[in-house]
Length: 494
Image (cartoon, rainbow, N blue to C red; front, side, top):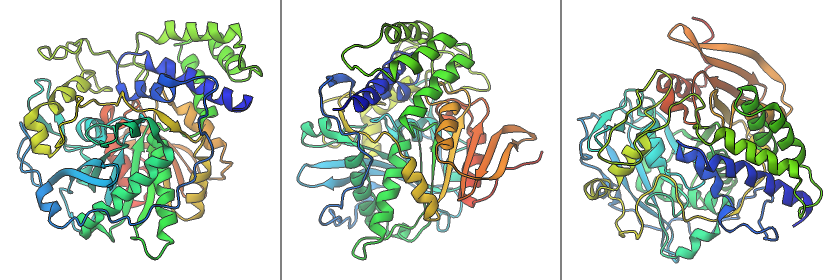
């Protein structure tokens, strides 16, 4: 590994290490899973620019006949009555390895026969789209503090789309492989390929969606998963012998896009919000990213690491103004911190963890059918990531050249992949402005700010939202997805 590659990796390790130490949201903590557990200075880690594999033999792995009916969920424990259908089950993505992905699917509450199909992906890597996306963000239900009952999410995205949640890669949530060694060979390319194979087979199971407009949305490390799957779809759509997927656009939120700008933007954001000092931010950018000798980390970099840890250990970087959960994972306790207008219940992770580890819940979801040796976790602790692209900017530019709709959104109080990181990354694309920076409105108040670039890229911020935008600002998030799917500009007047 060359010096430049070493320091690109070292910088990411520094970034992810600090994220791991915080209280609160486990999706932000999961960034530390990249390389950290088995990292060695001389290890060979593929950080080349992502290119999807040419793709694997026969993609239609299962006959899928009759499986849709078997996957239908009658009712989840503690669920209120609803007017839509929901499904859950497994799709095999590799028969020889016994690799299977768990999905949860909710049909739209309105016009399910005509509204788009939307795939939601969480990040990590290794964080559950069932536990986060479905149960805490854009799904139809949220787990109550009693950990036994569900309440209906009036801002669920199945108000405007048929929504598919995928736990990916294998080793995430209920998804698994019969070869546990595969958990140590996870990476960007393998995940994109598996996600594509899943999607092809899922559409065989639900053929009514084959020609439906299709969109991919995700957050955090899904800033890699979403565009990499989209590029794989574009490549495979050019092959006449493969299923055509009617991809129309992608949207990513608080997303890892470009390593250098992601890290620089985080330091700058935290310094500008009086969480770390200007000196600490300066030392990170100068001494932790640019040393020419990988065997001699500058003392200024070590000092910056210590200062960063001291300043951030006791706050939730995923929402810098949110309270921490005080439950200490005791299932007999409920939230002792009152929610306010800008944050989700800080103990939601705990509620969901208890709920999804219940046997009756897993049976209703058609999940954990192989009786995994480990408990369901919101973010996997068994994955080792072995290939990671340092940037997805070339993919975003490719999509604009192919006429895809691309939206990037950012909760403006996230300190993990903050708005500054996203702005710096977009600036790297050198796009011309179509509509200048302006406020957008909801309920006669500023919901955030937006800028539209030539080529159909929209960047939008969401006021008072953290790393999981739909969890902390659900009404604004629903407005965002409505405008994205409709291809309309966010509201510019009161």
